[in-house]
Image (cartoon, rainbow, N blue to C red):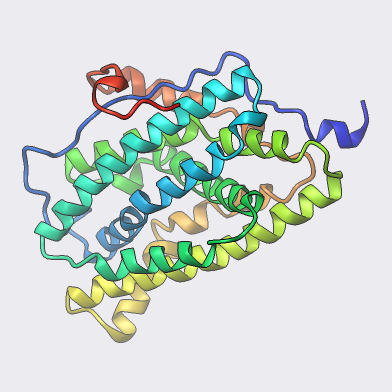
Length: 295
């Protein structure tokens, strides 16, 4: 088998099961304004991330589904499960975002930034949408791993909200290879170098926009808390890059994306999923009852 062929081979575990866990979080309670460690800075980071999810995950779904006809039977099933998981994630983060608004935040400026970013992609080739989705799915997967592996990130959080983020993290890990395997199928006739070049350029562009826009979002939410200027910048950068510093913590995993032969499942972290499933008493229900069936 040639090196170029090796680049096209998925290493997704054959026994991987992508399971939509249809859960609802925090519906019966009021989420505290500073729900994480009673800190406006830590809360702002996760609220800024959550504000992106409903529109962002809809974009992920459409980007991947555009290539479902090129998927084999196994991958097609994983795309359906991915779609169902993402639809449920969007529903739960919409509900969480409403609670953030009820707590006094205005998320409209952050949501507008997401919409403007998506508008810039209109008319672009579908493969670029898929490459951008693949890059962002790597971001969500490595952040999810860090959230589950390091309890410090959600220590002293509102319990229902912490459960929401950990549940979301479990499923992000579980479907972390779907976008990448769809990319391999869609670019099966590309050279190894062309595939690496396009995915690397898109990752660099996505990273620049992701960090810039999330920082702006955090600063906007801090402004709404009356925190501006040097204090806002220092606190935001410390939370993101210092301690707990989730962006700093995922730096090495982010760099791994650029290595030859990279695949998300070369790091099998399903033990984190099993640990969560074994300890969290969630009621699993058939997704078709509440969620539009993925086709």
